Image 1 (cartoon, rainbow, N blue to C red):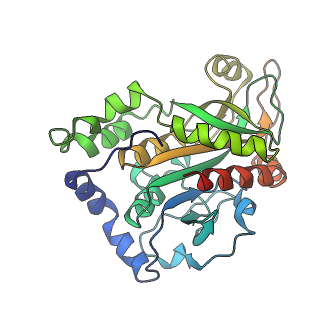
Image 2 (image 1 turned 135 degrees about the vertical axis):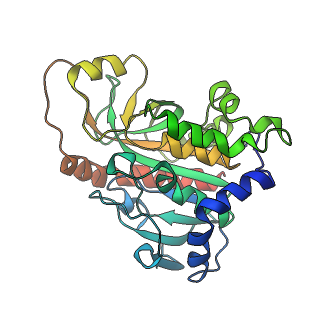
Image 3 (image 1 turned 135 degrees about the horizontal axis):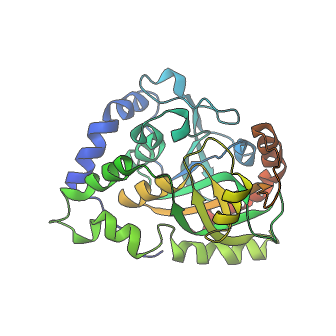
Length: 294
């Protein structure tokens, strides 16, 4: 893999401050040490249901853990082994548009890190913008564009590394975020031939992250199409935080609908969930390939 960033004691202290109490409650349920994190996007839990869980924790039983409210996201932590790697599989995520704070929306990343993770695999359901994409396709993220437009939240991410910069200059969040891809280039390059060898069709492109919750208007679709190939309401801030915490990141979008260009097309969340269920096998192949070469 490409160069990793090792969190300093100062950074670890900040993570402990925000997530330590929840982590200790989880440790009362499991002592598992994991190598990675997998987060399922909307309707994508089926991608991993064929992996038997060594342990399953109902996160409703963990006081203080933020609970997803959107259909297609559940609240379980499953300890599973994928391609020889033990991972913490979170069956849902908390979106900013649900009213969660940035810290709450990043709880899965932080807790996975505290459980020992060194890599993060993110999946999402997204709208497709490239003319060659169709619903059911998958796109490996080559890069991300954060248009969530919440300066206070980005300031909090930056503050995680401020106390560590004198110790480790490479932990400068702003330089890391602007000077290279948040997504691990070397890891993705290892995933690509595995998917090709297994006959799994895929695209590669840039994912645009918005706050939501509304889907894009035709005018917005025409604008965003100039900057990326897929668009959604998650992932980018999770990837940034995972990187700040010293983990490598790989991510995949399942295209569930195509964005309209000239006329209003009604897109419902139910349609997204339905398309995600159909495309889950391709997402499963991506997750397996990613874990296999992590």
